[in-house]
Image (tube, rainbow, N blue to C red; front, top):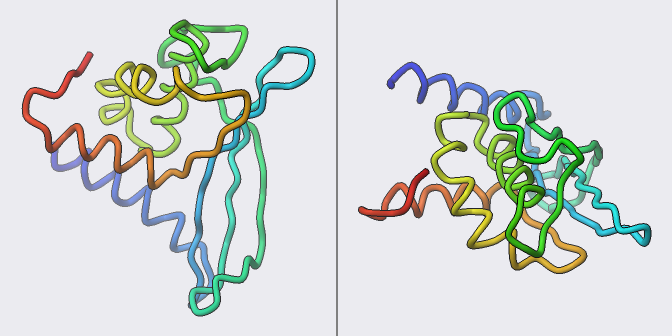
Amino acid sequence: MADLEHNAKKRKDHIHDLNPPGCYTAKCYRGEQLTDGTYEVTIELSTFFRENRVPMATTFHPLPLCLHIRNHSPTGFAWGYAGSGPAQLALALLMDAMCDIDLALPYYQEFKRSVVESWPGSWVITADEIRRFVASRQESPGAFTE
């Protein structure tokens, strides 16, 4: 267990090691239901100057489906209802934000029910908000896990 915690911390810290001095990186996820009815989820990674929060650079890329972990929805992500597309999205978000399968798997179904099922056509959530969700469940005795 100590090795897993060390590796997760090492992966999380690695993002910050890539920043120039005096900068930090913020990660958020954006979902948009397109006019053709499909769903698009993007990871937005922004690097900021610490002192004035002015963005230096922002990159965008699609959130991986993580079908190799659990294959709920090979056709893609969805949200706003209880189903396989929202389950796949919840798993992928927790995997990306937590960088640890052992932290994502126990909580993604609850994250789907508590958060993803209620999202409207467009939404934004930060990696920090996702990590706080998981941390709050770890601190609550008797919290639901899969």
